[in-house]
Image 1 (cartoon, rainbow, N blue to C red):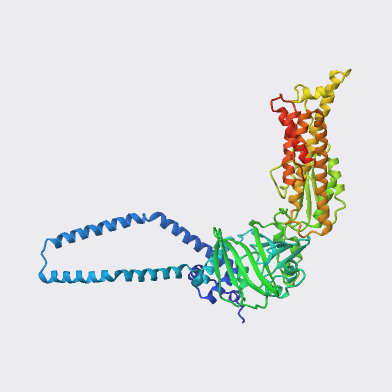
Image 2 (cartoon, rainbow, N blue to C red; image 1 turned 180 degrees about the vertical axis):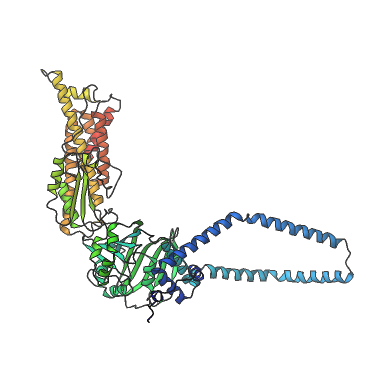
Length: 639
């Protein structure tokens, strides 16, 4: 009768408590340390025991600190007891006269001490020199760089072990990739990488968004092998540094800025030296590669926060012929999230068997796409096309309409409008946009049924003065009961012989309403220009095609042209009612093209001045100076 095989015999034994403590203190030999590290990467039980040991140590140290009295109290009591014993001993000795032989011995000792005192300065100098050498040996990184670098790396690894996804959770890392020319120090964005690790499986999921807007999805299976096409798409593109790609794939490296990934990266570097340097609030760990390494890597660097030892960025420095590049991976966010239904379906036994055959289709079902901020994304040609369509429909002028780059490479237009007709106009304008685009434009009654609006991808303090369609909606001056501060001046200007007072009042109201409307529209165009500059900043627009970049510039010029036209129209209207001397002084104001930041500030100021002068309020002595300031602001904006 045969005996069934023991499946547990195929599994490596768990680490003992002694081994875990020695691993945490860095006391294991190099081979034992690497074996323990590899075991901890795949064993949730040992990682849990390691975290429990660390918690026990922390609790013991906290209790010990609370129970022990202050060290100064103990030291003072011992010193006082020693002084009392010395005093009693001296009193007892003084009461008994010493024999002659002992007195002669005391004199000889005093003479000997006098001779030693004459030689003491030379010994003091020698002792000071020895002490200085010891200080240099203790605090010079040249003598102990590897110890300090490995110590920081071990503490960073403890941080990651404490933040591994717990049951029912996933960790999500968002990493920005840049390539920096080491000579010119000019960075070039290469894309954004999202790495998700699950508590129910050792499989990791990688989604890379390139500057062009395309998406590369990959599934890192149990062996940790990163698919070469994904690395090539993010790092190389043109395949110039193929040895680097081959080395990273052979090391089973995943670009998630983790300590485990960094250890794999430097495992075959052919060098044993390392150094650690503190730079402000971070530690820089430098691990050089052997000269002429086949991968072309000269050095790998990991940056760790000095506050909690969390990894923040990882750099791979390469040398290729006469060029030197730094591939920098910066972790922009790291979070734990509940494990959703889509991810649970991916980890089902059927899907895992599919993964083992090399198929990575489940990566597309990883999770529901989420909006990305402008800081964590790159603009694409499709995003420019969508922004241009919203621009043509005037949806950029104060309406609560936002264009979101999504984590799966698609685009989302989401917002709130005041009616179904306006929503249909926006939908029709977006029909010409190619690529994955989803439109979610709501009316107020739909928000009451549970619909949710995302926060804007980039927020700044200046807000449009009113929601709704800004082109057709204006804030009219209220002349029903009170008078605007410039009413008398306006009335004299419009009054004509044979025209009734009622008709003149209507002309004053129409004039005031037009000025208020023009001021609001001027502010909305300045606000849209500033928002456009933030959405398509140089950092986000580096990967755009020349045609897309020209479209962005054309939208900017459209807003500037409208700002200039509206400001000139206001200036012409107000110059008709202003005094000649006031108009002459305004003509001396310096003009020139303003930045979007300056235009927004001026537009906000002119909008506030118009409301102060053309809405119902009592006149003040500052009315004339406010009108002069308004004309000066309009002149600067109208150039």
